[in-house]
Length: 151
Image (cartoon, rainbow, N blue to C red):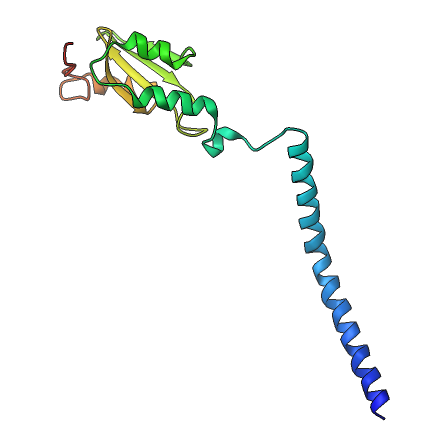
């Protein structure tokens, strides 16, 4: 009698185990496929977009240049130090020029350098379309009175 009861219990456990494993198979297959995909990508030299990870050498270089900028310094050495032309360069009748570099702080965040009379008056995370708005140059605006120290 014990033998029959033991066989029945083992049979139930085996069926339960198969059902459990069967439920895990799709999940395991998905994980295995993803792992295989990741191995194939890295072995082919394809890695994640470094710009979105913030590890891009270009970003590091541009950020280092911007971190060394002082308001009032000559803009030409800063632009030269960036090592690439700006994506956008715009100016206005007030004598201000904006230089925009895409994907500096992240894939979406650009950096700008705003200058007048050859001197930096603003730099940082922005867009030229924002910095060159007429309201910034009107009385009381961000650039209405340039506070550039003369060196």
